[in-house]
Picture 1 (cartoon, rainbow, N blue to C red):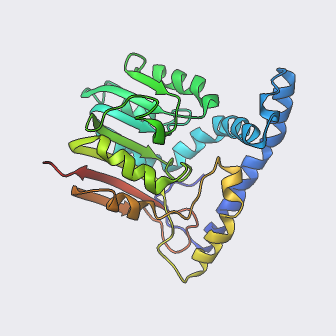
Picture 2: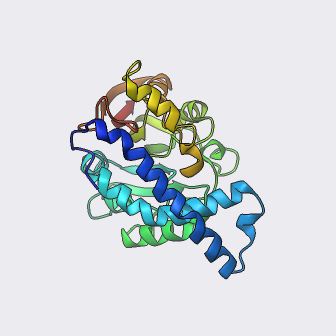
Length: 267
């Protein structure tokens, strides 16, 4: 798999089809192993099945996705998180090695906010592998429920981390606005996310809209047409903004990214 830093060309328009095929392949193993384990929960509703399906698929594809994006994400996250952190939608924890205590000595606590309980076992294992077993706590609710269900207080978080998760969170614009107050003044929001292509009017914009008709069903609700970078900028007052497009990404990328950090304005 090529890295995200490599320059894209017209053939890159076909990349989403390959990723959709990878996901579709895991429908059959999900059915087979659920029946083999006499686990009928996935068959109670289509939502339950999609959750089980994606958990199994991501156990395979998550590490590949990490390898692909690592050249862009490592400089952003490694040694950047500090204090009390909110890790939003960490999935199976494929990025947790970047928070290893040896490289991030200023981290005192990480809350992994992951509503998909099918991911929790592997997430916990990856936290332990990263040497974070004593500071990493899984919060099994959505980001929109942090106050009501998890009891988080406003202004209590030093670092918010969102890595390829805001594309699949329900009502993302509202949640981004809701998360902003949890940051302390001077706190950082580290972000690596799918975003709507900036090449509106070009072929890629129409292709992105077409792909997105089916994409969310195969990738746990992921919507690749969200202007997440714009929503982040509008969430509140920022003292410093350092956001850029994915390395090497351009007019042929159907699944472009935004990478960087935002620092909340100090009082």
